[in-house]
Image (cartoon, rainbow, N blue to C red):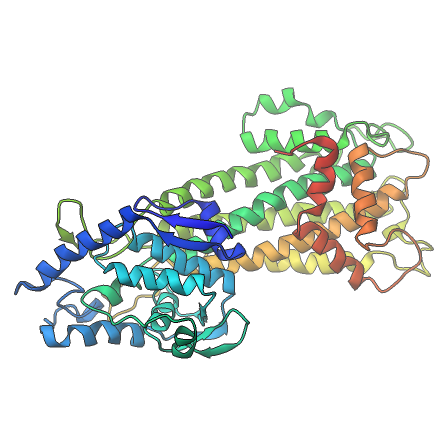
Length: 512
């Protein structure tokens, strides 16, 4: 099994994906263990002094004015975990919780939090044992970290609360730790706070969304090309020299992908035949501009994620010169903004995708295709309601594009008077990514049928490869009406698991 070694300088997106989705093992580097021990020595020395230090010898948030005596400090750390584990609602997905814990471990290993090496080792042991704490949908405002989600994870490290075992059953966390020979953590000064105070949940979801959207944007380029082909459009608008004079890199990449898919097509360039048109509709002609803008948004979000993956997010932090300083680095605004920005790009890509599907089904705009791509229109309804489903998804995606980060609800008696709502931005983006997958799948289904209905014209080699793989995947072709939901579900899986892009790339080589 692949092993990810966590050092002091952060982790990569591929590390997060390996641990969250592939169950990779986690190890601490010798450098990280040494940094943990060194920062703990600084913190222990500080804790022994009479001067109050936030989170070490004081309460938290609006209660930070109370000085906590040494005999109550262990209880203080236990209490913050128990009281903050206040999430409600459905359980969060296993991959999100694993990403959340791994990214918190990343910050612990930076040597900036002051926790003991055994705390970090226990977190790694829990991940390696396949134990996943039960985390709930609601509870984070994305400021002072993803507090409630991280608290539920910290609670499991203490042997309290509930967790899912590697067999998928939910049991008391203490029982699962005992079964795997893991000793619960007994928290000391600052350690409870350090386990809670990060942007790890929203960051983990951002990293996974970026991976999913990288595939989806390539998939959308493919389906846009198939629609252009089915509509007998022109590929001249995809010429590199046209995109070079408006030098947005995402636009150039999308156009290049579409051009690669359409190479050798016998369907393109017929826009002056029986129903002459000077130009294709915007949803076809401007496909690279819309998808390209989304790609550039992905690039910006990836830059933000990379910076956050290299960060040590906690409050207070142990600096390299030995100072322990309070700060505001736990604020989720940088991550929240790009999560919301991605949701906007996703909604717009879905919107233009649905417009092409509708064009394929409308006999007045499809340039000779049968109404709704039906076998016997009137007796058969064809793909009429598939487009309804797609439109419903697009409507939902537009609602999900409303930014969460523009909101703020003050908390902690106005001490935390401006919050990021980054966790909420991440949760709705996950829903949006799922919705976009389905929208792209409907266009694929419609465009594939439309191409097959163009009898006497030969589609591009890449298109033929898609059609062959799609039919082998159990997605039916043209014909009389049938139970459509299974076909659409199979098309969705075909997009989601990457087989669409794989089919194309076997002909074209890697898409951009």
